[in-house]
Image (cartoon, rainbow, N blue to C red; front, side, top):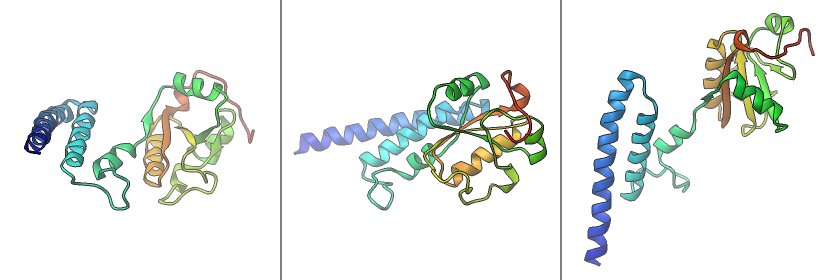
Length: 177
């Protein structure tokens, strides 16, 4: 019994040392713009909390608050990656978050329009399934990032921001197609 307890304690201490090291690296990474190191540190801290039996969310999911926060994020992808996803045949929603006038002038084929300004805290009517893969774009990349953050906050799990139509080298259509 003592041997098992010592082994568990050693594992917790090791995880703590690693988490502390990664946290220090994350702090340095924040100053230089490194996000991956911060996420690794947060993951280690979450694991450490779970080993010590701390931090579990209510409801018995077994996830810590940090893990839940890490999971709730959107992903930035290139226009090329977005095009590959569109051509894959998978069920994907292409979301244009510009204005109606911008959409009418030119948009990506198959895109639906939900202007960024109309996206609030709730789920937009045109996006009933929070688990759908959604590719978001705007004119230059600013509004798509704002909309992606709002959608994640509303509970959507597969949000991919591919920036602006200005950088879209593929076909577009005009009107209400």
